[in-house]
Image 1 (cartoon, helix red, strand yellow):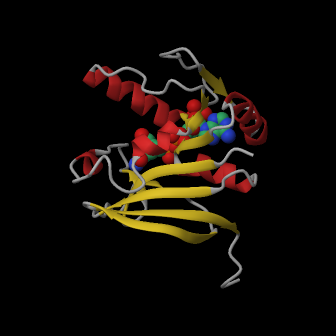
Image 2 (cartoon, rainbow, N blue to C red):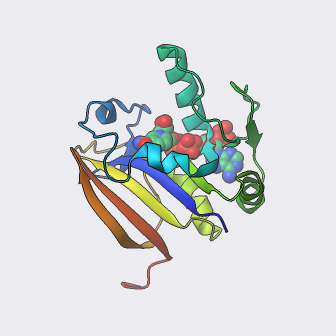
Length: 183
Ligand SMILES: NC(=O)c1ccc[n+]([C@@H]2O[C@H](COP(=O)([O-])OP(=O)(O)OC[C@H]3O[C@@H](n4cnc5c(N)ncnc54)[C@H](OP(=O)(O)O)[C@@H]3O)[C@@H](O)[C@H]2O)c1
C-alpha cells in the first residue's frame, strides 16, 4: 500500500499557520533546500495529494499575489462542503468519506506515495481512519501562542528520523496509535 505522509512545517508550539492563516513566520527562516528531509526529494515520490479547503484557498490567494501557478502536477483532492473553483486540471473537490478518497488517491498515485498537505484536522481524519503512516515535520524556531494546530488529536508517535536543516529541526514520526503510555 502506498505510504501516506503528512509533511508540514510547524512552530515549536505546534501551529502550522497563525490565526489569520499567515505563514510569514515560516518564509523568513534559513533553510537548505537540498538538506535533510527536503521538499524536492519528498515530492518526487508523491503521486497524489489531499488538502483542506482553507489550505487550498491559501495556495490560490498566494499564487494570485505572487503570479505563481498551481505547483502540483499530480492528481489533487480538496476536501470541502462548498462549490470551489478549480485553478488547474486534476483537482477534485470532495466531501466523501476519507477512506473512499484515500482509495481513489492510491489508485491514481501509480505506486507512489500520498501527501496529506494539511490542515491538521484533515491529517487527523486520515489517522483516525487508520490511513496515515507518518508525520514529517520541519520545526521552525518560533512560537506563536495561537493558530492552526498541527495535529489536534491524542496520538502516540515514534521518532524514526531526526536532523537539523539550518534553522529547522526536521523529524519523521511514525503513527503508533492512540496513546497507551499514560492511559
Ligand atoms: N505550515 C505548513 O507547512 C502548512 C501546511 C499546510 C497548510 N498550512 C496552512 O494551515 C492552515 C490550515 O487551515 P485549517 O486548519 O483550517 O485546515 P484545512 O484542512 O486547510 O481546511 C479546513 C476546511 O477543510 C474542509 N474539510 C476538512 N475536512 C473535511 C471533510 N472531511 N469533508 C469535507 N470538507 C472538509 C472544510 O472546508 P469547508 O468549510 O469548505 O467545508 C474545513 O473548514 C491554512 O492556513 C494553510 O495555509 C500550513
